[in-house]
Image: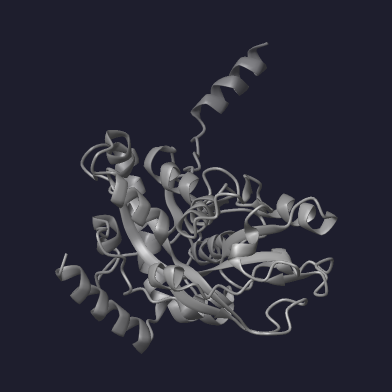
Length: 344
């Protein structure tokens, strides 16, 4: 018994080594086959090079992501469509609930244009043909849902039977003949439409040439061969994907301070490694213009903190040399961003 007591006492005297748990960081993206989640994984890869962890979360899309950045714990980042931002800004003036939802949410960086994909049966040759047809418009709380609803409203297609179905389920229903068309707002190329069961003799991407829509959205094209079933270039409309964050107050508490640091870190990593993302990440990185800031929204102070030249990025592991160097292109972006931000 004495020996056991001595052993217990000795153990109590041993130094205790505590491994500090990394502060949790999350980015809300979209469905598993969409472009948002691939962009999120690219950013998580950048963080990993620094020995840091960024969790990539699936979601219904833009609306859920916006609310997540505003209210979900440890969710510092979310990717949102620009028309969702426009919608919130337009209707928040007389809506206290919307005002509350917007409060504190800030721009991190603009990203790329997202094409409005409308996959339909060959019998449908124009948007007007959607009247009386069963049309999947995306899940509730998704950007696709809002964009599809706005497009159908603008074109006064009240007789279209709108079904709130996610893209993957909608594609299965389209192939089986249960519905006639589906909307999916995502950056091309998207994995969803690489599905070999999409028969080009039965289905096609619908061209969008209506002047009303061209006046409200960005004109874009989906090049021929982007998808296996697609043999011709298709003229479409697009919205901008924007990365959002929250305006954390560093003096408030530890959570706010650590969250702000995580935003600054990722801001610095993105600016320093844009060329790396373009060469190794999703093809849409090649279309990213970090200076194309959407009007009416402020860039967060924590984002700006990561832009300064002497920002100290504290990595858990040493950065590889390619991450330590800024390219001339990135320096030019930094200068342009600073000029744009001075105008806020």
